[in-house]
Image (cartoon, rainbow, N blue to C red; front, side, top):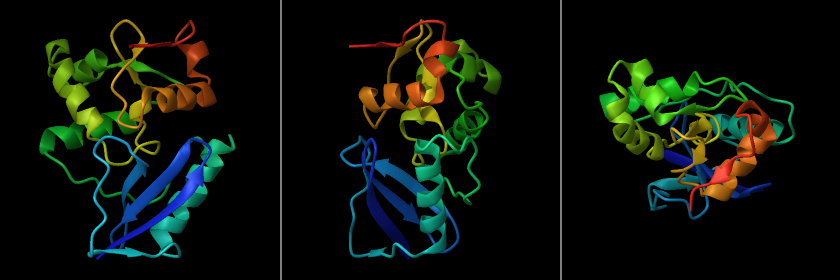
Length: 171
């Protein structure tokens, strides 16, 4: 069974998805790779992983949460799993490049595009902080939820100061 809930966040409607025991998705309405709701999905706002995720994300937007504890289940290829674990290790308010993530994974900076592709498929935005990854020259690129949201999330975390300058949208 797949459970879901949607609500209005400061950055637009968010849909949460969970299985019986863990959160499996956090999606901004209209984002790239937004899942199709179907007959298998059951609206259940009171489902414990959904309640916990919603509360923790609201605390994040209020500036009172930097770490998440909701149980997660991320389904993807072995490489995607490695990239998503690396994303989860990026500290609040910190930014890194796709090439740096590739280097940390031991695959070399020449695999930055593969890292970018896996990052773009991250099903649990905000909690698995793919918004903290920038291009090698510090530009905002590749956020499935939209570059304006990526900029807003980084600004909320104070990452524009960490990056050393105002973040630029790559158009």
